[in-house]
Length: 198
Figure 1: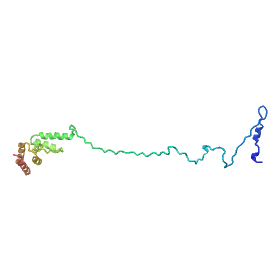
Figure 2: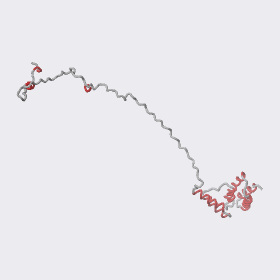
Figure 3: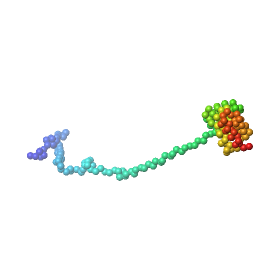
Figure 4: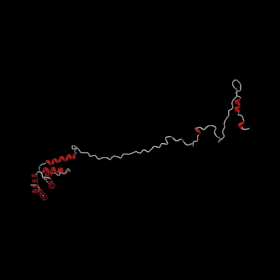
């Protein structure tokens, strides 16, 4: 006889189970459903029973492709050179020293005082301005090289300017013309004196 047709011993015992009043109660048989391998399922497939290889559902936000963002970089501004005007009251120490020494030179009187003031000013690294008043003062210098430099500058100035202090101009040139030690100094002084207006 086939194995499935034989009655279950446990089910037989359950059929003859007695109740508290002593009577035997009828027990319903328990059926066990078995499925052969490869046979179709009897129940409906649920979501969990779907194959793992099924195509996943596309998300709603996958269809929207964001556009690339283009950032515009403004060109860097070139630094403009600032011209800062110097205030008249802001004078450095070098300019103060130059003005002080020049004032001493212009206020000096006599050849010895003029020579000392001129050397102090020139050895400090400053150049006398190309002006008639300063160059006329330099004619009093003991050093004839300094005096000849002043004669050359004055000769250029009087070509375009009217000679100032003509009596003092002639007097100092006449002294160099008569008493200078070097012939070059005497000749330069004489030529300049003759070029002055009468």
